[in-house]
Image (cartoon, rainbow, N blue to C red):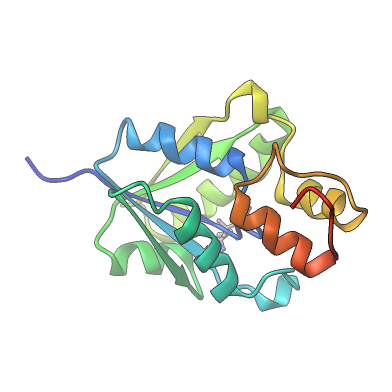
Length: 165
Ligand code: PNS
């Protein structure tokens, strides 16, 4: 039987425990997951694409079935180039639904062969977003419970020192 592979795309600026929760859930369904970080300098990300890839590699080092890559341009083109048929996305709340529906619909019209698979984030992380993490860290709040340690350290490095890290 052929391997079930999915591409898990996103900005991951930076990766949070919410993303890792979706990844773990994805691994219960897919044999391999390729995390694809969007190279989106126009969105003015806090972390460069190289930094985001590096943080994701550190955060997923214990997961053999996960690889981390970056892409530019259309997601469907990247997914096709990788010879994968499934895009994995996470849903935290109803508020995510409209945005995700739009992305999935556009991707479907661009390439009807590619399906989007949604997984629900654990309730524990339903409030969690990279933007919230960045804002909390920027004002000196602890993000220890929200992101893996390398990300916490990288945020401290960007925004200044906290005594706990
Ligand atoms: O983590 P994000 O920012 O919500 O991820 C959005 C992402 C990367 C999935 C989406 O912006 C994307 O796929 N961008 C690549 C360009 C593209 O394919 N656009 C058409 C569908 S929106």
